[in-house]
Image 1 (cartoon, helix red, strand yellow):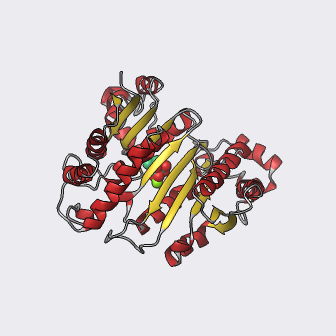
Image 2 (tube, protein in one colour; image 1 turned 135 degrees about the vertical axis):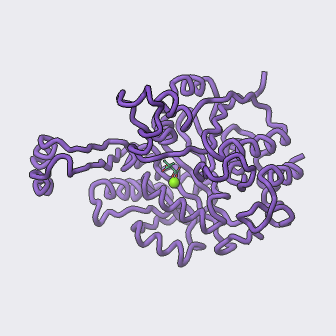
Image 3 (tube, protein in one colour; image 1 turned 180 degrees about the horizontal axis):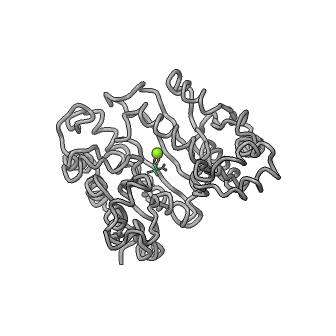
Length: 373
Ligand code: IPM
Ligand code: MG
């Protein structure tokens, strides 16, 4: 029997290409795992009205963790048009499988390292080493949304919050609401993860990114927990920055930041921004971690126009595999993999198109694998 059991979910578009690249590297390292394929993505939405079939979730429950490729997400109405004709008008509503998976497995922490590898021509600067901790199951992505908004809901809200009364007379169909739901538990958990990580890695600061001057209740809760948790880590500075200013500072002085910590949506935004500073989404890996399960995925999307072309940069998926190795306690393999990636980038012999080269996805993976033997 293999030592580890890994759910293998390539998903849509380039997902298959980049996961194959990661597999090639893992196999070369001698990573001992059984991979179990899982159905997820657009095809299953079109054919079954469910982009994340129950059988996939059940299968995942029998595994140690999941390696995930990429997913095509489309707005509701566009998605409805692509549904098989016999499934239309039967109440199927498209949802993002990755957002759902994070909630189903309570993968509350999304960790996204953004480190500049030496010699990467795409680096904004060479001295950037940021790790984003993003709360992964709540906030504006909780999925608590209404459209139309029934009048009684607005009236009810106005009883508790007079500011809601200005919307009471709106036509229900002309109103849409998305709730930003924060729990103290999730806020405390994400800041604790960020501080623990900073401590383990001897990092000087944790920057909490919010907007508590406007989003007083939700923003206030997260910042409050950060202050409280921060007291337990006297050697690590807590910086508080508003999301808008943070975007500016990340362009102006990214090298002064170390660990960033944010709620779901602001974390989503700063993780793309931080990724671009170190070569773009082709280098952006991520770990979605819960108390008893984890899912590893490149931050990039499914890039439909490159489907099956064996063209895109697989580094994000390969670096996600490194995070998986660390999670599974294979620290030595993770270190070898990281050194191999650093060496391939530094030596600059094999580069995909985004880096100005003409190597294929497979060639890039083979070059990394060469240093993993
Ligand atoms: C990400 C992606 C997802 C998200 C999308 C695909 C739903 O942007 O992982 O950052 O918003 O979380
Ligand atoms: Mg994103």
